[in-house]
Image (tube, rainbow, N blue to C red; front, side, top):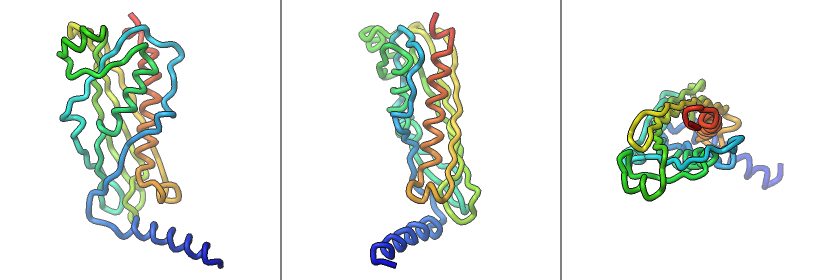
Length: 200
């Protein structure tokens, strides 16, 4: 075996050992998706949509199960902010961020006709008793949509599932979460695009 091969083998072993041996805590991961994976809608809705993520939501850290009795922690709203913006932009002709659902100045100045408030819930698990990264991850998106007067328009939901086994996630501990985020956003674009209520 050459020196380079030995070095690579030791590096891989070190990675595997770190995944297996570091136990008893909540390990940080991310849910950040690949924005290039968010598809374009077949036809855009000719409206300006404003969406709201509060500072409290962006700062919210969530902890869910990993493997080996450990847990993982992450920031769903912070990690999905750019992905949500991309998804809405793929559906509506214009998208702006608002300070809140009652941001009258932002709504008026930007010509907003629909206000979207996303809600995110997550879950994770692992089939492995020895490694902590989750092998399965779920992302639930609920987008409550109102008009500029606050009247309900519709509620759009999507659920994303992500899976990753050891051979895959040993170089990316967040892989199942990333895949779940991408799946949820793809389904969100489809659901938004197909909503009759949003096109009225």
